[in-house]
Amino acid sequence: MKKKNLNFILGSILTGIVLLVVLVGIFYTPYDPTAMDNANKLSGISLAHPFGCDNFGRDILSRVMKGSGTTLLVALSTVAIGTFFGVLLGAFTGYFGGLLDEVLMRIIDVVFAFPSILLALVFISLLGPGKGNVIISLGIAFIPSFARIVRSEFIRCKNMDYVKLARLAGAGHLRIMFVHILPNTISVLVPAVMIGFNNAVLAEAGMSYLGIGVQPPDASLGRMLSEAQTYIFSAPGFALFPGIFIVVMVLGFSLLAEGLKRD
Image (tube, rainbow, N blue to C red):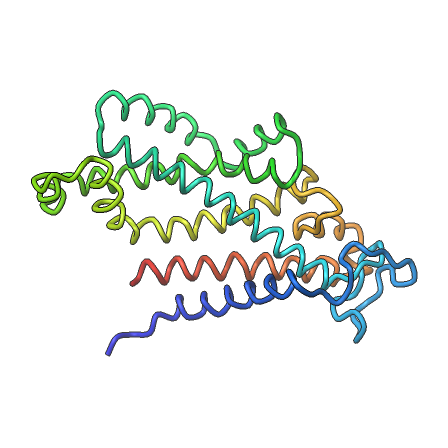
């Protein structure tokens, strides 16, 4: 009997909770996340406001629901950009090799030598803060890691028998690359995407915390943590609930990545 993959099960549950909150938040929130209410500034947990209210009287539950959606959107968009261009670069360099491989991989090695968040901060300083610029900056910063993973898999696979048979059958280079080889990299690429998603969540939260990420009036979990630090004792729920959602989001996808590696 096959042993249960507890990492995958627990990761699926936590990720499902996050996705459910985000999905509901798209269509419904108990209050307008940007509506201020002076009478409820820093009010505690109540039936009317299950997570309490922030320093502007905004409902924290509504802002967490919207902020989770913002963080998820930034993370997914970032990983999509990094994966798409990383797969293209890794596929062409790994398959063809030669001068193309040497030039592009040396450039990627130089970029890869710097932490992703540091590169993103450099791009943000050039482009300016904002959700769109955060997505572009993090997406560019994540390209090298995906390119290296795909390149190593293409180098491993390109001389295997099924690739040689495809060449003998008259398949072109692009067909061999993206129809025959690429599907065989999925088992390695998917866990890497999950890990990249976690890194993107933490990077977005960190940049928004510093005030250079998602800008008001958009709700952001990282910015909520930044705004809450002054009121950590007078309104603990202000920081607690955004922090919990960041942890659940990261933990869920981390466990999913571990579970997929086991399978």
